[in-house]
Length: 126
Picture 1 (spheres, rainbow, N blue to C red):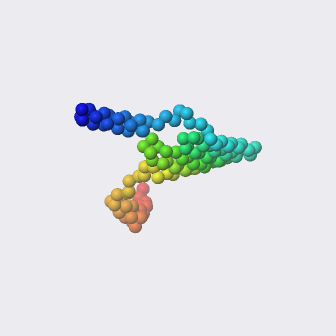
Picture 2 (cartoon, helix red, strand yellow):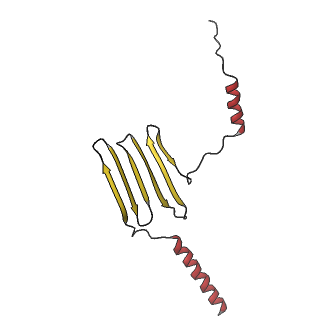
Picture 3 (cartoon, one colour):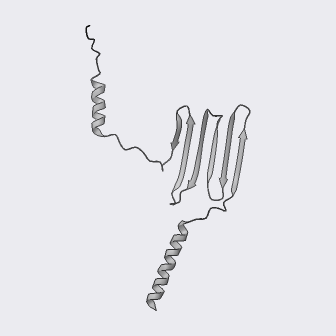
């Protein structure tokens, strides 16, 4: 009998853990919405939802945009993404984004050597 109770408690705990990870967001509704489009091509919008997604963007036509998005990832990590899109491309910024590894020392030494020993052009005689 004791083993059955313990087994039932373990099974109940596992079901609780499994169900807490899968949050049904299909009933989320928009709680805030604003949109503005101007004659000069500039625009801005922002929205928020009942499941804590927030977004905002402003820009000028297809030339420039800046904005942000905040939400909670499925693993519970808060995501705060800020971005700019312009002639230099899309430039996202956020703590959750991967970063490149540090430049190895041998590359840094090689770059320093090249800078200290510039190439001098040699003209060959014909």
